[in-house]
Length: 298
Image (cartoon, rainbow, N blue to C red; front, side):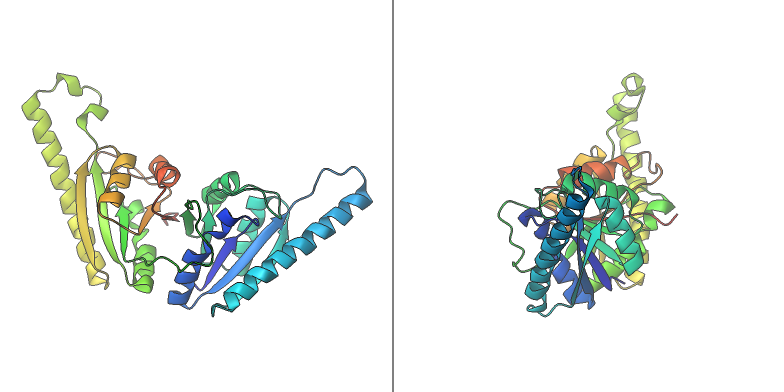
């Protein structure tokens, strides 16, 4: 897997900040990088002038991608480029499908560049509709596309006890094998204050209920960890008490993980869903740790 990694670029340094990460994955997987940028029609009333503007934009985009290709080829990477047109998110998704991309690596925001589109909304739409895994990076200020890619040695995997959530594990395991990483299977048990009627329960009953939910979570994660280990990937488990998004972000920081691998949706399990809107919250608030977003297969 991960034989072709599509990297959408808009000419901004922010967008280019994902390149070191994509390069590192490509180097470990023996994958090809596909750099794309999108040009869109501009508001010019004269049709002839509009065509001239689009032609010039295409030339600028092609020159820009050629520079990117030369830089990465000089680092030993196999790179191809493609100038797209139309709606940015749709064009990227179609290109990924036609190229047979296994992964899309994208920054969550960027300034306007050669293609006149902003990464914030585009990344969100790609995230909502992509059928292939998506590596989402929120770049730090000053990150350089020429920097050495980060080593990925520990991956946090939030699970909610559902088979749908577990269905992402094969993708995560293959990624872990590619990068030489271990997994931390994680679940946060929601505080009982999140449930209706908790006020009427006694302190002893509340304590027992929390302990029971944590016990169930540990058992389910332990079984999943054994299955992961049987497939050749090292795995540990962590259960904490807290709300889902805060729990994932806190665990990622405290455990010093290099990546959070999370599903885009899933049903409720263990009394509390850890996916769906949680994935969105983690992606939006994860300023320090990149996210590998996977659409569950079931």
